[in-house]
Amino acid sequence: MQARRSHAHSGGRRRRVPRGLLGLLLGAGLTLTAPDRALAIPEAEAIKKLEVIPVFVLADDKGIPLPIPREKALLLPLYLERAKADQELANLRKTSPSLKAQVLAIPLNVMNERVAELNKQLKDKTKPLVAPVVVNPRDRQQAVAMLKQQGLSDKQIEEGLSVPVFFAKPFLTINTPKGPRGVFFLSYDEMQQALAKLPDKDKLKPQVADLTAVLREIIKAPEDSYVIFPTQEYFRLVRDNQGKGGPAAAPAPGK
Image 1 (cartoon, one colour):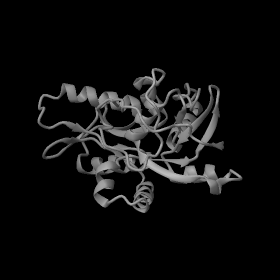
Image 2: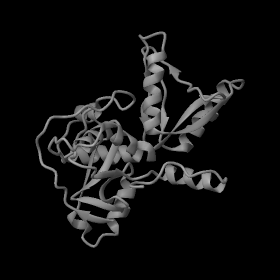
Image 3: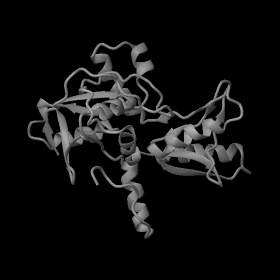
Image 4: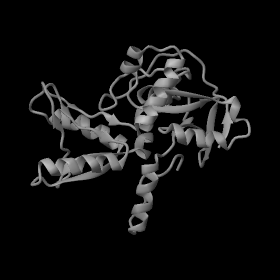
């Protein structure tokens, strides 16, 4: 990895990010913007970058998600960490020992489509399926602290921050078969580990934004300029799958 400055500039109209589990929350603290040009990458291509973020969901033995009934919605937590999903599965089995349930790992881009489809199939439209991504508490705490340092209020952070994504200004880049790309991280510690390898790391300032804002900026960029760094759970799933003799999971950035 190496550092580079973003060549983005302010201006241009916003482009739509598809509705679904990602919602339409405004991202706080995102400082890069880009002009809206005909070469902006398609939304589907931007959403596909989420394939390196597996989420873990509780489902029945047929693979159908098991949402939790709430007063105004059906709640389906999407865990970024397998251990938390496994713990919830253990709790479920204690309260409902006869229920056949499992934990499924699903890429976030695929899960986004499934949530949208499940909402279409709901007979009771007054109770939509809500699928929040359950992030690491340490990452959220770090994101909140960073945003408060920037002057954002608790209300702004609560309303605008759902899934924190970290990056550096100027950008860290990773070399891919398609050329260098700016990198977004879902883990603050992983971004810091990448920064620690740079001789001029003190010149790079950590930043944070909500995932929805990051996707909008990826879409608005005049060309394919960014990647999302795979989570540790993604790498673990790839290793486990290869160890079983199966095909690898979704490709890493740029492949």
